[in-house]
Image (tube, rainbow, N blue to C red):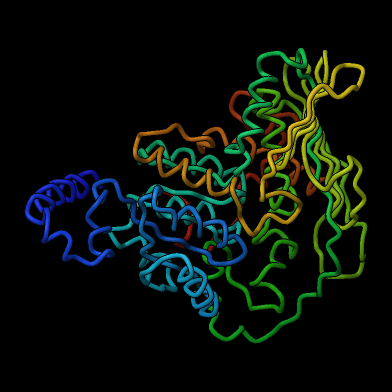
Length: 446
């Protein structure tokens, strides 16, 4: 990539000298913009054109991002066409439409992959991209299991690639501000955080054998997962709740965000112990195949604790809002979410309340907004060496590990101890879920 950029830079300087003045003015605006700043321009490909697509329109379209969208890739034809229509409202050129991510990664002109595929594709697809020489922005959850978590971090170091997870609250200005204040002692010693999420999701249809939807490459959609026949309602969203082949339950779907803020605030790495109380409690006979209600407790060294309080299908707001994180300290406490933070003294009196007026808050975050834009732009600048990553994968993967730990504890119906240095689990039964079965030839290795 450096060689290509050096070539483009030299070509740009030479071309600019030749086309100064009247020649430059005779060029079209589009041609001229393709020259100015081209030495630092990043070529982008997006894989997965579903609910998170809107989050990438602004950071790619903004002039200061200095990027070009080369590919829109999805295994569903209608998604590719919808994606193109959305982007055409923001850019004045046509990116290529592609079904197969492997063809996208074969293109040496692609610098960055934005990986917004389903969960089971996140780590394998990202590792494939790094092997092909690409930097990666991978949506949460960055991995489907702990083995992938390890492999993703190892690959980023092995290939020397910039990899950022889509835990975009790490780029939220007011969140950065209050976390820095917590680390500076504004609430004394922080000792406990409660990460919470509640929603009122409805019934999920039972899986039934069905014809593959028109335009869907079902084999490629499954990718790293073992092959099976298509069942209704699977490809679009309900794969989140249809067992463990594709999804990571609500902890991976939304808990990743709040657990990450909690761990960030307490300034901790891997926990020492996890235990959960979780069950499916709503719509008992519908197609939802995992817990929809969970309370997980993570114990860390230095007597610090993080709790994850999840209610996927009961909308009662235990903490006055749908999602967020509460941090308790010896001299006060803090509530923080995507929109604001509230600082309290030890008696519970409000000391300061700050509202960021962010347009990216609430329980449904698929539409993107200012925080996602900042997070993606942060990665672009980190690739150029002009900024430091806000969510580097070696740190983000530790928050991701908490998701895997509570899911494993639920699946084996018991808690377990963890090595707080390496993240390894001290339980043979739990370690059986460290990885998964892969379709032969699709293993996330390098």
